[in-house]
Length: 387
Image (cartoon, rainbow, N blue to C red; front, side, top):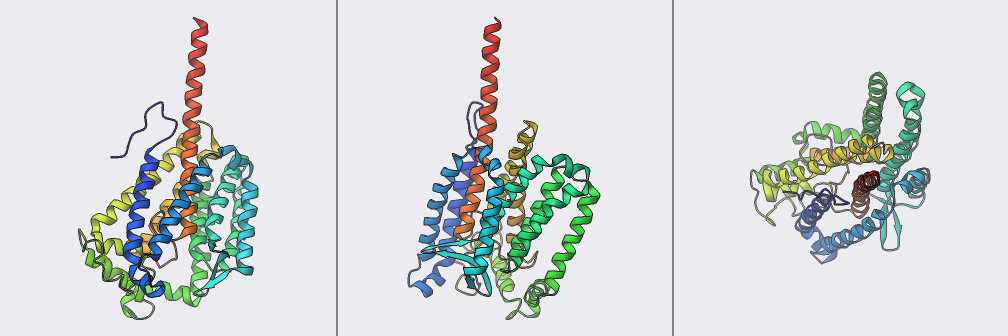
């Protein structure tokens, strides 16, 4: 049971409980799933475990710093953050490291930055600020609805040059979800969403490797040693897990049968070792975090803190969709996409940015609580003077 914050608390401690639980689960699963490949590549079975632990500590430190930043600063500098996001996406195309045909990483000494990760958070910050400035325009005419889509289109174009369709899809869904919550007309939402879905479908159809992923997803057993290899191995992991799993460390698929076992497919190894129960626990933790983010957004809007409300909404939608895609891809529900499981998978950039987003939620909740406490104290003083 998560701790219920007291009425006088200035922050919601349940966010910390959720974060610690997910960090711990991720650390254990990264260690378990990465030992065989780490032993082969680095002659140290704990290489990825140590790296992941360092990133968790670094993420907590950065999150603690972000926690000190007032949301007014996020709002004030949303345009600068968008420019930084675009700059990172341009830089990665010019000097980025290419791995498996994708140019997604900026290398600065021992540090590797995946440019798409901060781009998501900074774009959602900009979009939330735009909703505050142009909310009436978004609700009343197509022009206000189209403007943020132009910015999204520019970011999507840069991402597709990497190529990174998965991040584009996440940003697409979050953008339209936020526009819908901001009050965009339903016909605008449906028509533009339809065009976007057709565009994503066309991008998949006319790209041979993306189309191979789609066809491999539809019938992975048709080519179990080719296009369907990764998914069939993942499905075998889920099948072996059954209800309670094979036990920690007893996965067969992590013995280098399943590629990317400690990153994009860590949930398959978790399913094999802890079964349906283990997967359910992680999904429940994620669902609680998403629910709290959406309820926080609603509360902020009611308090007329519109930027904070839209930002919380965008983080909630982002977390929920990325979780659904990650688990769905490993379970054969959606085509395979290179998206990490939030706060669980190995991946330094993703871990840091997700932790920053979580810190922003805690900050929003803190400011709302502080406002309520100050309002109550002010009311009490007025009441005392009137007597």
